[in-house]
Image 1: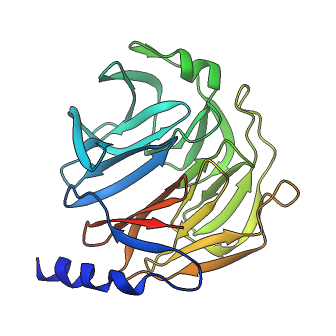
Image 2: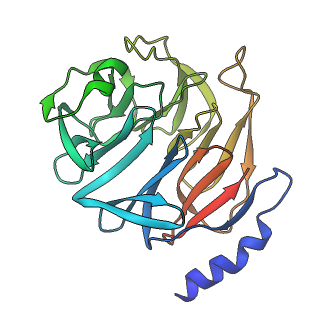
Image 3: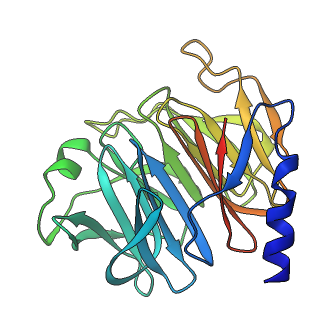
Length: 259
């Protein structure tokens, strides 16, 4: 508890040249992973339960244990803790989405769902299939070339991923067909990357540092440079939506940063 108190006392120092100001967010301590999209926020805690944020209160989403949960235009999707089974949250409960067992899943694209397996293979679920999924069934996933350990898409500009060597890559994936434009390697090293609905890109490196990609536009969707966002502690996970950067520290504390 002393460590948490010390961390929160440091929040006053987060407003610097990059223009982000962080405060303590709604807590479900200790948090492990967080995801935001279309004004919604979900998270998993150390017990691998999923939660949905309403106002300033976290509400538990059933008793299913999940290692990763994501929210976006494709809805809420998660990955089971024990067997890496994929689920979609439908009408108040998680339903099976058989076809691929994933380690990490992302629902932030323009209706498509993407993810990676324990063996780093990359998979995409077409937007028409993702939107229609309502009950337990086996879905047809498209395998994309390459190997990644984390993959995230946006409704704007494209998708980003990182591999086991911490290399960062950019690509475009067509939502309706899962068509793939090829990989463009981007400078820098990271262990995770998350993209906001507006195309904003944030990464966390092995040292727990957070960086935002600059210079992203329609002509240069991979951007031009990285800007470090100072944080009071090592960071485990981030997600960005509608001007808010949601952060999980290595203490398991949630920060909400206005950027």
